[in-house]
Image (cartoon, rainbow over all chains, first blue to last red; front, side):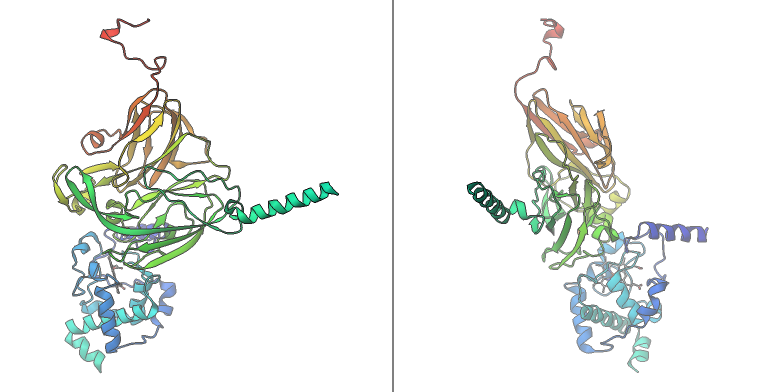
Length: 158
Length: 338
Ligand SMILES: [Cu+2]
């Protein structure tokens, strides 16, 4: 049953691929399986974050998050993925305070998701936001993780 | 000698005309597509060669009237529902630009069903408020196609009115008619019940249950009836934005002489059709000659939608009575046979 469902979902996403169709029931809220296609994973993981822990990047990312990028419309003011709009999505817009997610994702994978979108409803912003702006967002999303998870902050600030 | 001079003068004149009259240099250059608001349709394309055509649409979020006393925040292309009618010719290369108004709250985009390429343009056009995106595509297949926003949550964007029609004319054009009109059906979902007054919010629950509170033709467009004169051939480009309902499109008191079912221009059209099915994300072309004056009512013949939820439009036909085709009988037929 489980594998039947997975193969239907795979078939659907290959046939109808828009890059970002939310497929109902495709994943649980806590599902952190990779969003980057396997043939692009090496590329994504290899990307270097040009502004890790950089205060300027974080501040600029915050500005875009609630401003022109409209990330707040879905991910909410606090990045918990609890905006009014979130109700329409399954899976929900990612909760950036989630420790497990923050730990498994590399910076490059987050950059990839912002640029290319995911097949579960994240919008691709590659055509609308510059590369620098997307890295600023990555670093703000990391900051959200650190602010809500003190252990993470300790690890990363080392 | 004189003849040769005359010929070369004529040739020079022709060359000049080619340079001076824009219509003649289109193949080499670019032209801007004529866009119209429903129910109007841009004029037929006169060109006989492909061109590069520029199309620019702007997505906006605007308050408007959904029914008498009922306001709704529509999400639109160019401020109307449906968005503009776009007309190009098979073989054209289209440079498509999408602007998203700085006043928008949401990201928007476009998927044109006439496009061959990823997402019909959706991936290339995810546009932030105040932003602009674009892509180039070649119109390979003639037909009448829906375009719609494809930004997640896609069903919500469509339910709020983000759709319209694009016609890719076959190279030889469509047969000549006297009047052309543009009609798109859409189903709407409000938190309040049908007829509840005031500003109404979108109901995700009703949309998921596929229980619309309103079903409309040209929900937010130029008001007024479609018009034709007795004896004229009328062509309607009828689309269905959905998001959920399949339309049983019918014009009360008329029979469609010709229907390009599912918008399949190039296929043998169906003849003598009473009601034609138009699925969400689909369109059809119907043609009929109007023989008798009167008001002809466009409906979705799933008839509760027409009578109770608003899916009606009017084609007003004026001209001389045509008793050979239709004549009411007074007093139970006393004057029959006179
Ligand atoms: Cu939209």
